[in-house]
Length: 154
Image 1 (cartoon, helix red, strand yellow):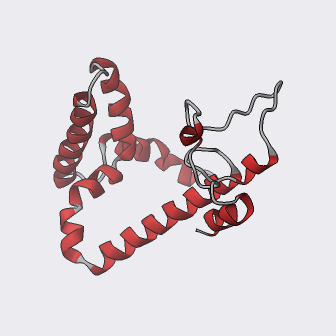
Image 2 (cartoon, one colour):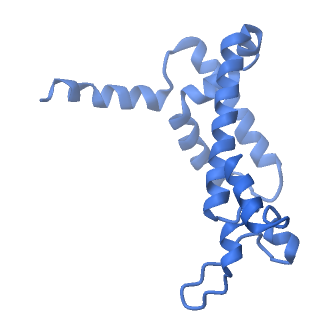
């Protein structure tokens, strides 16, 4: 929040505007090494996906607030934790979910929302079912077994 405030203070009222709103095609600032076309004022903007320091620090701050808020909510509201169990299961086996996602994306056509829904729902259903029977995901367990001998090495 401080980064966005500083950007607004230093850059003026348009500092939080997206570059796409100004007619830019991608909404990001171009960093061409041979032809720098950036003005000093564009470096203090914090527009969405601008890639400036203020945008990155502000985005990281918001992400930290969301994570802390979700953690506190999970701690204080047991019913919410029960509802979020499928999402927690996917988070507990993220390596398996990432690798499964990687292999499945080549098998599914990418021209609609259907592949995304299949990947997300597939990961949630698989992770929830797997976590009822095992403590770790399949690849997490494999990684655990492969790295166990390392604790005996000095």
